Length: 315
Ligand code: URA
Ligand code: SF4
Image (cartoon, rainbow, N blue to C red; front, top):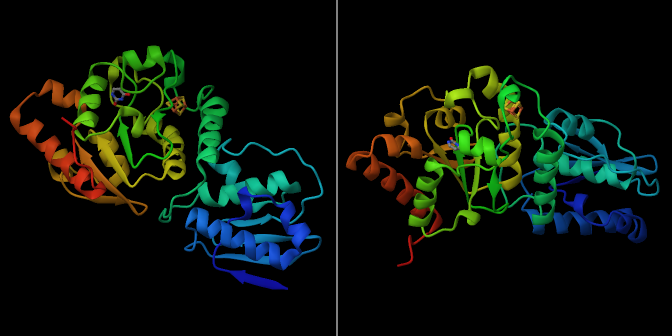
């Protein structure tokens, strides 16, 4: 028997309910919960009876067993890598823990379609982001930048942030501290955030590459290629309303346009359904402290504020 539903959200809730209430009632209740909590009505999922449990199939994602709750398999950590999470969703998962992981994978891992809705519950976002940092990024050796770094710089901020700033890569102070934008450019970014009427801990801040390019050179294409999978997953988890790219490498990576900053900034672009505003990098503002550049950045930030209904600095 195959039951088609428009959305699915059973992954984060008590799968044992399915057994207690009976499969049909349980499935419908959990589906409604998912839709309410996560706005997932856009995700078409087919649930198909399969032996003792049932499997969920999502377009382009594959299948994950979602009904077998008796086996107490230890959940494998999701977030080990994009490939792994897709594999897990595509493969046979045993037990409630892994079934849950498979469903989480459907929402946060893989694909390049639009991201819509509020996404995962806050605790799940926190768990996935810290797992990615602790288990993958901190020990990452996927590119040569790992050899010269002191610390990786994962990024930080509010997991529910409406604005996600993307810089280029850690500089010296960030490499030493392990935190993004804490040097001079960071002070300028703090001023920009304050001018928008926000605190730094109300936005999310990350970079294209998580390790410092020696001498603050721009990251090389193979380094960006190796690292941006982490950034993409951060964006998929946080699901901001607006992405603000700082500087050319971030703007070009996100918009996929090879244009100059002058051509890209000040206009809305989109990344997987999320609005994108490219603007100058705070270091560029510091190096070219002209009225023209400052006016341009403020005008870009005002567009973001208008989009989000922000009133600006409280004076
Ligand atoms: N410049 C960046 O692009 N990122 C940082 O984290 C610091 C400086
Ligand atoms: Fe890994 Fe990114 Fe650091 Fe390269 S820059 S080693 S890909 S974390």
